[in-house]
Image (cartoon, rainbow, N blue to C red):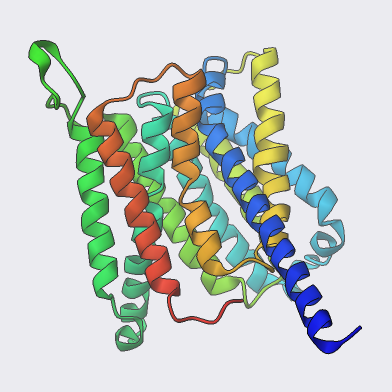
Length: 325
């Protein structure tokens, strides 16, 4: 085969591989988006923290099976204290975020929860900056103009989603409302996920990712199991709906998506991944409209567009000029 033909074939194969990776990330994002509605529906049969404890325990068991060789190497503890501390700290952030997200679904719509949770993307640069300043490295982690623009855009989107209730009597386009408890919990969830993202960035290059995956999901399960009897009156009705949701969220939305994401991000440009991940609340919104019976208002549409735009602007602005991994 001549050199030009070989180069063309190699380029074509690389292009197809990137396309497959992009489609894989899109599929994982769709799965994550779908969980908001199905979890909200399953909460008819379980209290939120009890549901999380069951879901995350099942997900931990599945990850132990998939990553058994790496998980077995976590023992003895005295030789692996660093990865245990890192994994359990990530589990604390993740468990708290899941607790607030799931509890918030009792009070707000699945689409609102998805968009408010997505604000975590905008919060990450600010948390990185605060961490750098605490370490005396503030100069190397400066906040740039696109970070502030993304934050301002996200705040405008939050205002539309939480303070405007949509058309009311008298033909009003914007009805004055306000954030409810579910909205505040979803914002707290966004902060928890942002802290988890920053922590994972700190630890992923220092420790085995598979071991971190098992420890953080297991740690999140423990957090919710401990909080459940303290913050709620736990009860579970073992309905078909609840069992199917537990299996789907544990197997598909946790164990499978972890594996698919790890494979796909080896081949797709980081800018592709950033844009695709920002579509998670869009998928959640679309599913809520089609199957959840949620209504569309001008205010919610404006808020949704602003938040997704802020997420994409924050991520792509950070990645601009970096080499493609």
